[in-house]
Amino acid sequence: MSEYKAIALDMDGTLLTRDHKISSATRAALAQARAQGIKVLLVTGRHYMTARPFHHELALDTPLICSNGAYLYDPVQNRILSGDPLAAAPLSELLTAVETQQMGALFHLSEGIGYIGCEEHVTRIRAWSANQPDHLKIAIHPVEELAGWLDNPVWKLELFNQDPARLHAFMDEVVEQMPFTRDWAAPYAVELVQPGCSKGNRLAQWAASQGIAMEQVVAFGDNNNDISMFEQVGLAVAMGNAASQIQNHADQVTADHNEDGIALALQRWVLS
Image (cartoon, rainbow, N blue to C red; front, side, top):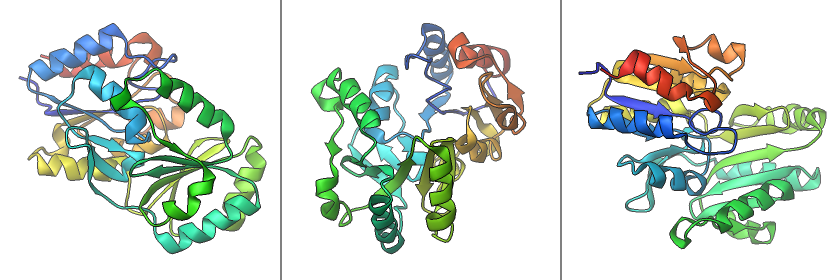
């Protein structure tokens, strides 16, 4: 029997190939792990609506940790089980600055994704959603509905600007003093969540609820928001496509996400 009881999977750059698919080898290795009694859990920066189709594809029986650990979502009950939304007062102040300085923004809401600007991102989401069955489609809400958003939880805010210098200046001048945890997803994109929210912390909360020690968890990832998992689990595996500073936080480095890195790592270090 494996010494590990759970496998935590980042999605983009990790579980998913460059064309946003799950390879047959990865699917088979995860099925083998589950057959051995190991739980498989998606832990992602994505909104639950954009993660849910892959959870469905793998036929997982676990909840999803989404929006960089802001909440735990149960796809069976179709509801958020627990989480910590962004504080309303500083969020309202931030949104005023976002509109004034014409930053792009995506809002992770309980019932969908809101947006200001960032039409390119929204167009991609709409196109992808159009190919999903009705029960897996993504609800997208334009800025005109902004006032209604703030009456409900905002779990994560993604800020975009095609000019990284403008985005960095906005962060330094506007966001630096605000009580949000920030993760740079790319030079042109930064993600904000409530302090204390992280993939690692929410994973630890879920593991404790299952009677699983974090030493019995394997985590796979490739980006800054995966480090919080790497720091807490028994086996941290960075993908071959991860930057060297991310790999330095891992116990092992596997192959590229486009070269069945998860499957190779599971066969080598986890599956009996």
